[in-house]
Every structure is written in structure tokens, then in C-alpha cells.
Amino acid sequence: MIRTAQRSHHATFLGNLLIGSYAPGNSLLHRTPLWGKSLLCACLLLALAVTGWEVALYVLFFCFILSWSAGMRIRTLLEIVYTLRWLIILLGLYYLFWGTWQNAVDVMCTMLGAVLISRLLLMTTPLPLLLDGIIWLLTPLKLLGLSPKRIGLMLALVIRSIPAIMDNWAALQQAAHARGLPKRSTWRLLVPLVVQAVGYAQITGDVLTARGVEL
Image (cartoon, rainbow, N blue to C red; front, side, top):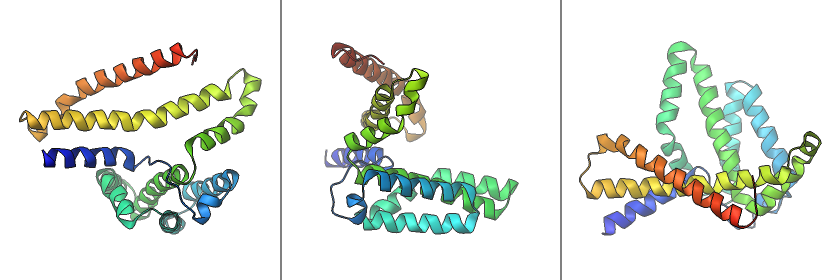
């Protein structure tokens, strides 16, 4: 029972690891206004996207320093890298065989940097404040007949739904393990996961409809 509880906690932690959530703090980044953090993140993403592997490596290192200064533990940073290890390895091998090692380093640093930047923004900014900023940024879309508030609501649903789906996946894995299903047969859990995801979406839609919200 203790091992099952540990697996549940670990799986839930991994489900929230890459996305993260707001963690109150008093760091410089926490105190920075939303427009300042958004400008910093945009500059970092631009540097990752348009420069070579040397600058991408420096930007990634800077993202690590920023994350650490904002209160993210070194262990958490290492767990993020570990969680993405297979994707990093596959991308690295692909660009090593069909490109150059410089391209491999550039792509891997860009991917890790983008994950850290997005997680850093969510970690240092309350979600309602972040969504208000996104809605304000999307205000010009009103000229095209689009509703910024609906777009903000959809983003909030996406951010909140991913951890919930990951928790469902962890529960399915625990149930399969308790019934002796081999790890190599984990792919069989994809169908019940999709069914649960659809059910979660239907329940969310019913709740929104009951409150008079239409997407």
C-alpha cells in the first residue's frame, strides 16, 4: 500500500512537472510585473529560435539560473531533463545522423529552454493574472469577431486539463500493475485513457453550460 501511494504521488508529480503551477515567492521574478516577465520570456524564446547552438546553450544556462533564483529546486530541474530524456535522445540521434552535432545541440537546448521558460512564467505568475494578460494581449482580435475572453477560457481549460489527464493515466497504470499487467502491455491503457479524457471533457462542458458559458 505504501509503494502504491508513493507511485501515485510520483506519477502525479510528473504530471505537473513539465507544466508547473504558481508557487508564491519573493524572488525578483515574482515581483516583476507581468509585462516585464512576458517581455523577458519573449526575448529568450526569440534568442532560442533565431541563433546558433552557442547562444542557445547560453540561453538554456540562463534559464536554469532564472529558474533556480525563482525558487525551483535543482532536483526539479534535473527531473524535468530526466522526464524528457527519450525525446532529447531521439532528437539528438536524428540530428547527429542526418545533420550536424551543432544542430543537435541547438534543437535540444531550444526544446529544454522553451519548457523552462513556459514553466517559469506559470511558476511566478498567478494563473488568473496570466490569463488576464493574455486576454488583454488578444484584445485586437475583437476586430475579427473573435472573443479574447473565450480564448483565455480555453487556455485555462487546457492548462488545468493536462494534469488531470496525467492523473488518470497514473491511476490506470496503478490498476494495471495491481492486476499483473506487464509493463510492455501498457499501450493497452490508451483506449481507457481516451475514454476517460472524453468523459472529462463532457463533464467540463456540462458544468460550463450549466453556468451559462458557451465556447
